[in-house]
Length: 592
Image 1 (cartoon, helix red, strand yellow):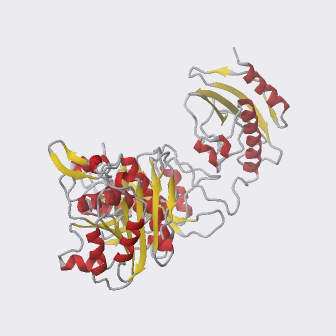
Image 2: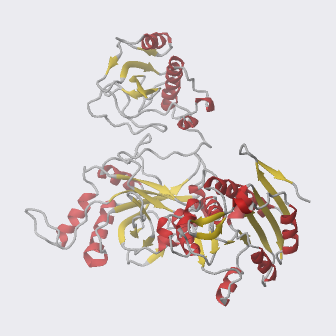
Image 3: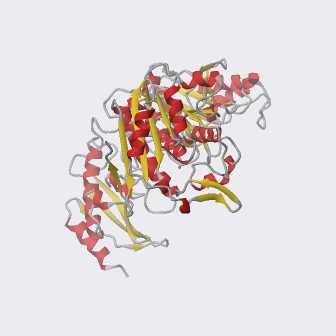
């Protein structure tokens, strides 16, 4: 029996201008309710949007939520793909196609209806979506689904799911020196990302003579991999798209779109096959990379390259054969050319720009701060958490200095894991950070401060910001005596007993002002160390350890990171003592 609330939807459709239905609700085997209805334009029809089109309203339960979606009818609905619409393919035996128009507001992906004006009550939400559909089809007919100045959205790639994925790095600065000649092609090295699931990245570009012409900047971990050419790259004039906004699905469609740009995919595959048969390719090319200039917003000028990725068709080797044909160079060339015009489906892969500004669109430090080189002295719990924060926010050029090794007990509050036990803290943390972000440039110094090695002493003088996380007064005194070549931003951070508070001191000077720093630390209202409350390394050991939980370390690492970023924006000496109250709040205590 159809629920009463769904019967009310039929009344809404009958009452709405431009909509009608002669159908009833159907409960599909997968417990999805569907209702077929018609929608009519209030503007003149267009080549891809008829005056009247059929649609399906779908409703189903997911947990405690009611999902509402609208799809085009398979027979009498639209068959084109527009902007703000999923790829509009036929959905197997279902009576609707897969091209769901994007009717929700962008903030709806977060699941908080209070963040948008989309109604929460089911009947109101259905009415709201139906009204949005009427606006959508009118806009599609008028070619006004996107407006000048709005963010540019690439077409949905048919069949491409989250993985496999190919990462690349293209910045604004790269655009002026990047390969930009349409029709130019070459080979590329696209190795797997260590430990990741079906994820690769473009590590190197080669020309047609196998000479390296470009090496994107990646972390040390990504550069250390063995590089083998396993991809073809091809530069285009612009995005290859079928009108109104559909990615091609077959090779002959892609070939036709490239031909419109003056590029012969048949010729390129023929030349690439010759290249392979000359034994310059150790592996059969797995990927085809299509690069083109891309604008951030509709109507604006392009300012960076974008790469689409798909599986490369099989290109002939010397021994490639087909039944009924001789093994000859002439046949190999013909077969390779045929691949470009075949009716075979394209196998699109997801691609993603991992340039520094693109991987941190969720939030990062200011650009000026990202240019700073930071030395962190002390790779313990606090230092490791702070370095992790800074890296994720875009401060990628860091040095880690520590002479200690990782013990199992450290892991109760350290960012490292069991694979690091027994290793140098500095080396293990630097390796961890270089695996954390694709633009990390982290260097380890397996030494106490001050370093005895002259080469290390010279290397650390190049850092702009010196952060002490050792909680050791002797290190502070050594900082004041070290021969720094020019003014540095010095920051000292340490946690008070039982992690009740945080000492934070900063100064932009040629020498670290140790006397002033220690005086402020002494004046801070930190709790005294209780001898009876002392913690030891474990049973059978009298060695004292510092009492603090992982939650405490994360709290003070966050506060410390904020203090560091603020210190980078200001001049002069700064001191603060932050105190954690019993209920978990943090207050700043002024110390004269």
